[in-house]
Length: 205
Image (cartoon, rainbow, N blue to C red; front, side, top):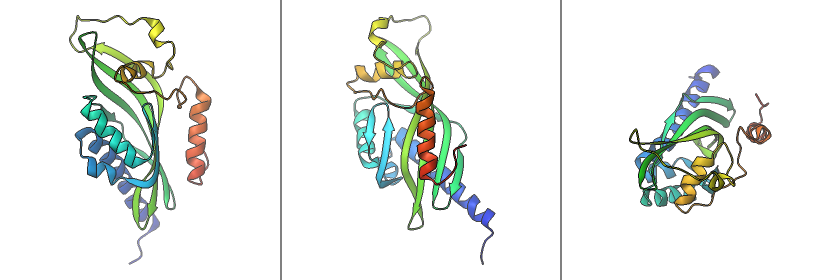
């Protein structure tokens, strides 16, 4: 029986939503094979500490976990926009990274908007790209009453929308990409959205 288009679309939206949730949950829980299965071989990932394909992103995430950089993700509801065999999924997210600086336990929160491109190939939805638009971040002590002091000059080379994230990750030996989309550079966010929706053959919202 030929299903109505609305029913088929609802099935695709559900499949893409579950795909994105599976990728993030697998990342947080260290289910590396499940995470790897979420990406197309020619996928592209662009985040603060990594640029490359999905397989290498998984390998980088494994290495990050081994370094005890244990990031977790709080996700908002996901919006999915369909365009045939291509789709765009967006959501707000908070990246949580427990850290230790100057001997003090700290909690880093990075507020972002995640942008996924998904593509159906051989009747299977997988992720074609993953990007982030950075909004702001904050660093607070895990135990109230404790504090650290950071010389502002150590932050001057980092973007204001993800400078504390950059600072913490650079202390772990990561090289930070300073040219990503962020609310401090509205044109960069618009350019990313335009790129993503043009790929999906849709007009920009």
